[in-house]
Image (cartoon, rainbow, N blue to C red; front, side, top):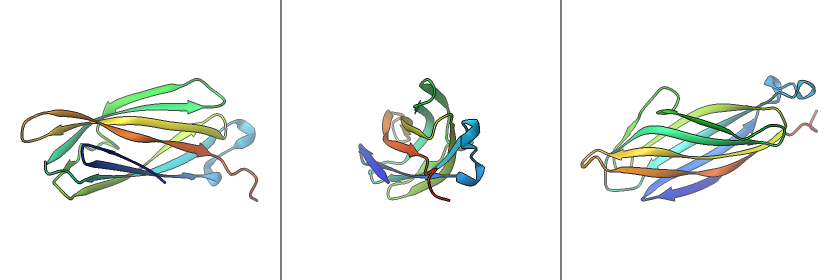
Length: 128
């Protein structure tokens, strides 16, 4: 589990290798990651966009951008939090991700780039 804090907004990420959905012999490794976003600031914020850098030891770096997270643009009051689970496929069993969320402070429209901490994607292919 890794954590980063930007202007009172805490992002925590926990990853899981999904062996039952992976096919190592076909270079297909599936990971899920659970993200918790906590608004420890004094302002109401809304998550507008996401940006990811995905590093795969068996492939090139991929960049993914889009609106919200898993189809949502959650609004977080002070001391509120939002959790979601998403996934990533790699060609190797070794990689990492990092990124940022574009958040808007709803009282004045100010945009903040909130850091998503870098986290490792490591397949445990030796358990069976």
